[in-house]
Length: 436
Ligand code: SAJ
Image: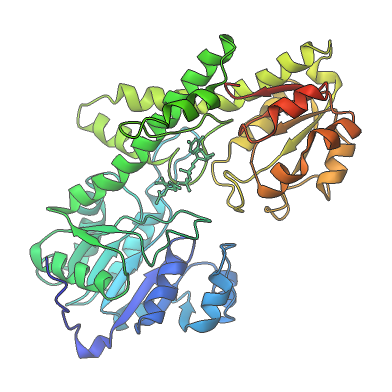
């Protein structure tokens, strides 16, 4: 499809309202503002609104503070600004609850708020990750409750977000996008909107459901591949095989192998969540995703596996986990970010406390209020054994064998296989990785 510029009505003066100012909505708002759109950023949280209007990012993401100082995003809690927009983009979370059931609450709540101010000629785009069917079965019926019709009075499209927190190479500006809509005009308008702000390629999809399915496929693919290597790691560990070395060996094959790495768990707001949306919707359609469910079970088992590795490591020193002080390193779900959503560290801490009655300290320099000590040095001073949960640059650089030896650390479980196994073992410290 050509990127023919569709002129948005003069009245809207190329105005966009972005609902949700988190990891997804805020970068999108900055980019649209940079590209000449008048941008209303709408969120429920007045503190977040005040920060954005003070050109300070409520989201700890590299570069966002600087970007906000260069552009004008008009943040407000007042959804009525939607009336002034040609385009409304919904970027609210799609989490799961404690039982891993999809929670469409935020989407439903925002759809009702958008409905109140929806007017003829507007384009509504959902960026939140959802299973196939949510746009047409949940969002569209709500937006139509006041009599306007999608495809006739307003347009409804889906452009799944692809933000990778902390990734400075692939950003909202250059990541390729897919777009689907409920009809051809909506698709053209949605492609035109994204073409006006992003540099990456835009692939129109045949339908809105196929656009919803793309993101679910991407992230389910990643989840099952991580589960695969986690199962391999558990197996290879018993055979005395270093899984990371085997992966590096397999990577020498220049085709048909995509490396994934075993770890202490799968966190984040995408990978451990998105498959459950498809599992649940498919079940309602009479299909049982055995493989996706098994992958989720394997990945959800990794925190317990990690703590069990520490029990076994301490047994080599004839120590019980309940009579040592455990230092847990890292709360965020992946290296060098502050995001703690679905972090496996929370399961590890719960196991240490409830199952093993172990004493522990926790430290993460990226997570304000997430630590029980003030510094890495203080954690090491108060620990006899360590579990590395997040391979923050600071940890990998500072957790050298000689440092651990100096602090009389007995055992280390390297939940990200990020530390120097040989040097730590040589220092007389029991080292166990995940699959190594
Ligand atoms: N993880 C592993 N082994 C791996 C890769 C990841 O255990 O081989 C764990 C990480 O430690 C983390 C979790 O999985 O706890 C998720 O890691 P991630 O690298 O997938 O990071 P996310 O959650 O930020 O994933 C995002 C996703 N982007 C979107 O959903 C838009 C995902 O699709 C990307 O593939 C991923 O970034 C990426 O490639 O960086």
